[in-house]
Amino acid sequence: MIRLENIERIFEVGDERVYALRQVDLAVRPGEYLSIMGPSGSGKSTMLNILGLLDRPDQGVYRLDGRDATHLSDRQQAELRRHKIGFIFQFFHLIPRLTAAENVELPLTLAGVEPSERKERVAAALARLGLAERSKHRPDQLSGGQRQRVAIARATILRPALVLADEPTGNLDRTSGSEVIQTIETLNAEGMTVVMVTHDPELGRRTRRQVRMSDGRIVSDSGAAHES
Amino acid sequence: MKAEDVVRFCARSLSGYPLRTGLMLLAMAIGVAAVVLLTSLGEGARRYVAGKFTALGTHLLIVLPGRSETVGGPPPLLGQTPRDLTVDDAQALTRSSAVRRVAPLMLGAAPVSLDSRSREAVIMGTTADMYAVRNLEMAQGRFLPPGEVGRAEAVCVLGLKLKNELYGNTSPLGSFVRIGPRRFRVIGVLTKKGESLGTDLGEVAFIPVASAAALFNRASLFRILVQAQSREAIQRAKQAVLEIIRERHEGEEDVTVITQDALLATFDRIFKALTLAVGGIAAISLAVAGILIMNVMLIAVSQRTAEIGLLKAIGAPGKQIQRLFLAEAAMLSLVGAAAGLLLALAGHWVLGRIFPEFPLSVPVWSPVTAVSVALATGLIFGVLPARRASRMDPVVALSRR
Ligand SMILES: Nc1ncnc2c1ncn2[C@@H]1O[C@H](COP(=O)(O)OP(=O)(O)OP(=O)(O)O)[C@@H](O)[C@H]1O
Ligand SMILES: [Mg+2]
Image (cartoon, rainbow over all chains, first blue to last red; front, side):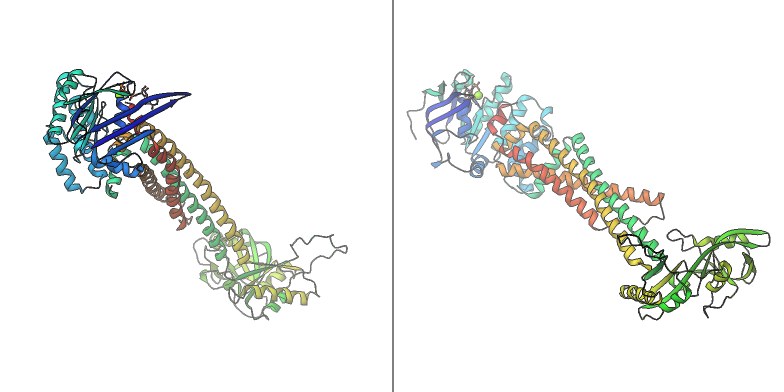
């Protein structure tokens, strides 16, 4: 489903060139559950952003579902993000003035889904994550774990094939963290491919495949053997 | 994204920051209200003056003795004092087919007295035609009778104020007043109408021009009022008047003819220009409102960085985000403009209460332009922030908390 070939990402800071990613090759098959670990600054987020089409590599090719996604226009990339990719962030990024339900509804609104259908799907998604009574609450009226689950509902309301999570539990305590992880694992069980960046080795061990990065390179990959 | 969703989304984000939104709406509203009110004042002033001119009479030409145009060159060596205008000159003007009526006007001042009461008044010697030429109206009785111009009949018509001062509430018709040394029978009283352009007809007494000539012992007229056959005939009438007078004054063109229309047109132009200028100045406040909108939108864009990044992450293309911010600017301008129109309406009502006689009127173009200018400034000044939002790098936008 995902193929990164010889990806490089270089940031120019002043006169210096920072290699955030060098010669990265990665293949992910549909339905995989994969964690990316590594020290701070090793390029994990950069790789996730490239996978999510929020950033473009300076070198190399990114194939999504067999299609070259590196050279698409802004509009085409936006379309892919809308329908194929769901993002989960460390800081949730809920819109503070909107209620939980309205936040979850946003991708449907952007996609032009009819209001009546939107309401139904939002209610169903919130109910599935145990947030039915919280739908009218604004983000500042929710706990961290609840916020992250609202964010997950928003990321998955259009049933994307690929879910990208950048330290989804980084801002949560243990209990709500493990609730969130369970939610993510349920999504994976439903067939979504999950790529998760984490610092937590315990979380890393739960995933079926672990990728370790260091200094912009992939240094170990427990699942690299089974190429797709 | 559907249009109604865009509207709802923008409305939510605008109402999310009530103070900021309120201030921008206020700026817009004041701008629009200023344009509408000031142009309406200008237009009102124009109508007011036009109204005064029409009260003077229709298709009017005024003939004055002497040339008032500055021709340049040295002054005439021999004291060429202009010839007087006479009643015969006035009579001669009726020859022209372009002229409908002619009223000579001889002016003087004399005390008008009844018994022991006496008032200094302006005495106007004229003919029956003055009534139609100057659009006069009678409160009582009738105006000077038509008849031979040379006949010095001892009758007079009083202005309303003069009559009230002399007679109070009793009817003066048929009684006699003394004007200077002579006795005149009162045959009519004018209405209050006609205080136009300087002369207050309330304190005037009209007498036949021949009587005035005898009273003041002179033959020269103050001016001749000419009514042309129609609006189109005014220019022809002017030419005819100049020609006839020149002929009668041995080839000397020693009168000035002012046409009411020319005066009116001049004033009209002045007031239109004034209205535009005032409207333009007010429109500057709209531009200022536009700049305010831009400023605040720029702040909004940087405050909502994370939101913009998120919208991109969940699949909004840059164009869509640009459209959202432009729609927000447009909504601000439109709602502000609507509030401005309401404000103008209220201002109008208040002004109408304070100056009931002033013909305030809103020219149709003014609210239309005000609203379009408001919308245009909102959109133009909204472009920069909207583009900034659409170009924002989502990675950077989302990496900040
Ligand atoms: N916009 C940028 N401009 C310059 N350098 C950047 C930029 N984004 C990332 N980098 C650099 O690229 C490298 C990789 O960054 P990245 O954010 O991918 O690390 P990370 O593995 O996610 O770290 P962390 O665990 O702290 O989140 C770092 O050295 C970082 O300083
Ligand atoms: Mg990171």
